[in-house]
Length: 119
Image 1 (cartoon, rainbow, N blue to C red):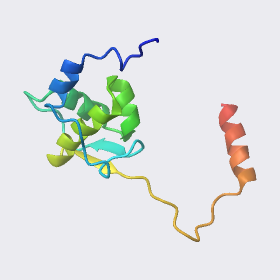
Image 2 (cartoon, rainbow, N blue to C red):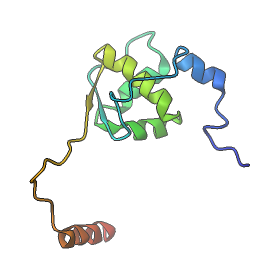
Image 3 (cartoon, helix red, strand yellow):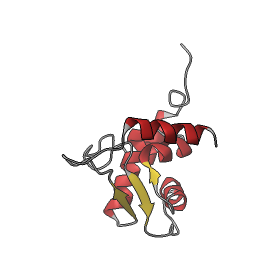
């Protein structure tokens, strides 16, 4: 079996990064929740928290943050909860399509896809 990046992560380090926590309220963030910094990092702040604040000047999805930090999504969600609780970030949840909302025609979406592929 080939070990991936997450498999090779030192479990002791992840335990330290999360302060021993392993669970987070799953309703707070999902993989596509957009995160935006509301402040700059402060002196003495945990390095992972500071990295998140620096990278989220523009909205980034939770899964993107996880990728950039090379940390499991579950660990990133714990770190984001810390920042959200202190008001250092805001979370923008994707909006669900309301019933009765007219969606774009499939043909139009195909044209957009082709145009993007041609860029």
